[in-house]
Image (tube, rainbow, N blue to C red; front, side, top):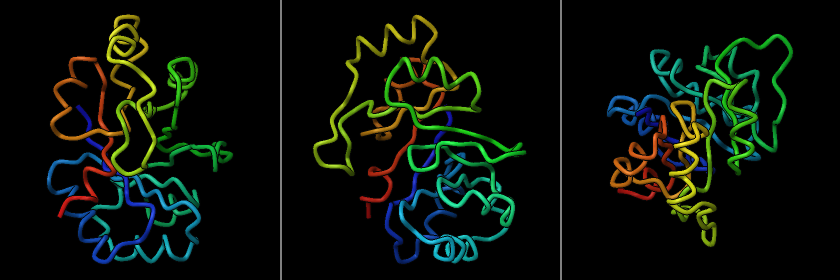
Length: 179
């Protein structure tokens, strides 16, 4: 199962080092998600990350960072919904329904499905699916190795996600709220 860490929306002290530790500790990649952050602030964070780690980082903002820093890919979302012309790197996107997963995963390397569980980092952001619905979606082939669970994901929930045939798990609150 692919493990993805998503950065805190705010810049944190020592964040570049923490990103490197996550990648050293078994995470496959880190999604750089900083809504509203400037290009310069995102570039400063990437400058602090050694070159050897950058190919495992996906950006949600400022897609031109992909080329400048030789990143792994880009992530489409409501703020940035379109693939830049001529882009040929890894592309992922956010989905909030099973129908959206069915239609979008065909053109993506992988998709996030959220919120699978009650969010750890967003108060009041509750699960959109029951375990039964997720099981049915897995049986129908909607949830497969291209679908990454997001929302309330913790290490303890990985066995359940594997049993539901998710190809990966994305952690945000469980990563950044720990000491």
